[in-house]
Length: 290
Image (cartoon, rainbow, N blue to C red):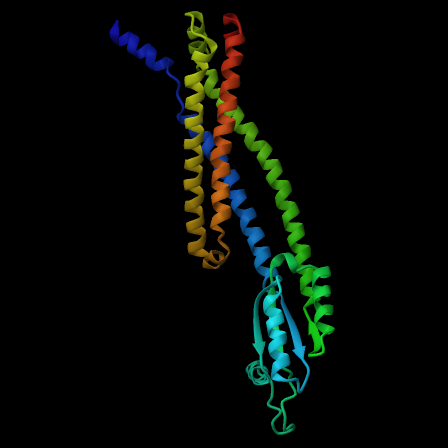
């Protein structure tokens, strides 16, 4: 009799392995998309922050004027990095690009000194760049200011299109993920409907029945999230092994936020789906459970 009782209890105890595995796989898919979105945003930011503005200085300006202009560039909030290019540096760069030496034709260096600077990505917009260009062209020490407007338009257009496509995919996949996890949890609870009803019939209160199942759901959701995160980390290391260049755009802060969302999503959906299923079976009549 003791063995029969143990076997019966074992059959009645909830089985969570498939539930945890199913939720983990769904969260893994969502996490992979999140990682792709993060990389796409970082890649767009990387391209924007490599757009360079060149400010050419007038000939025969004083050292004081050039120093004041460099100091002005240095203090601007939109400047990420800058380089002061002297006339000699401009000539060396010109020669390294494979151009012919003009020494036999000219006895002076026709290339102007310049300040080249890169901007933070939020300033790489047509209106902002035009305003920056006009500001520098109004200065007496500046002969002209240039930026690759065609590149800027192309980068912004591609980034906007990619962001829109990924946003649509993320929203659709998010809805699918919630639906799949909810159904996975409901299937797991369906196999335990008689256990829930039996506890109610012997006098257990609704709170007494739901509490351990809810707590287990929270634990399972967290465990599913951690398993999904482990899978994402493994994927990232494999991807960076074969494509080392993507290490440059790795964003640990955004990855930490993504991992937190995955765990919270796993816990939240597991908890609400489990609690709703428990209440549903408690309200049903015994005959309706068959």
